[in-house]
Image (cartoon, rainbow, N blue to C red):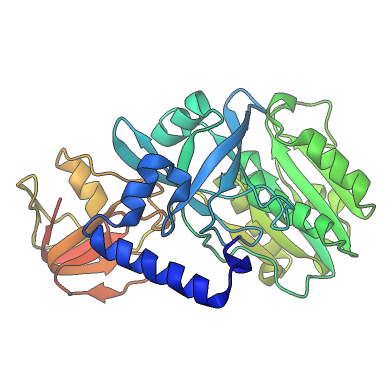
Length: 369
């Protein structure tokens, strides 16, 4: 509608919006707009759930209509999803399973409920049409290049299917001319996500092969048992010529990496992790005191990430992925030096925001928590 207005009118509307924003300080216009309708906010991204389905007993699939601030995503990326639970906003990361070229612009997220997972269980049990979620712009480098590879092998396990299914759907929507194999692992038939959709995609794209493997059942699948070189040769005989995209539980990831390394194909393998990485820790030489200013708690620095030290001290700071990607454990470091356990980078700035799950104290550190 705005694009149809004369330029002078649009400039005037923009000035009025800026004046209104200033008058409504310190809260800003969005804080008042969301009282009328959360989807009206301009600076933050919201998404309203339009459809809910349960493909398996422990998952929920949400279709979400994003607000106008959403800019789209690339297949394989993830989105930070925020939901208020008992008055506290919680944030977790999930990868869209839909095509990046989905005509209606909606997102599809499939979430597996972790028995210990606060957000995943909440969504699995309580999500309903009309629920409003917070969204971030997409992030992550687990994406396919342009131009697309001549052959693509997609491997997934369990709920790790979502980013690679997004790749498959995107390739089909683009009319991709090359060969695709989609190799998916599940415990049994009851645990297979998107079975009907995968069959339909294989029919629609004549050069796509879908192979389902059951790890805990001996019948009813294309393959049986855990990943092996034999599975690889059976599902995609041309795998040495392909670019391979992998996401799934750690045992599957390790097995695929091992086979590709033995065959000198590691550069052809692209992975997305959803388990915490191994951090660079030196607990033997840790010194200093870690102080949590808000609670008054103190602890001798053990050399572990601050999130773990806070938990050891009896505190329960908000956190999500423990991987440094969801930012839900971000707090202000008032004084001291910390080391990023992923990159090794040191930071000594005062009053800076840090992520507790990947920050390790170097000497005395005070956190506003």
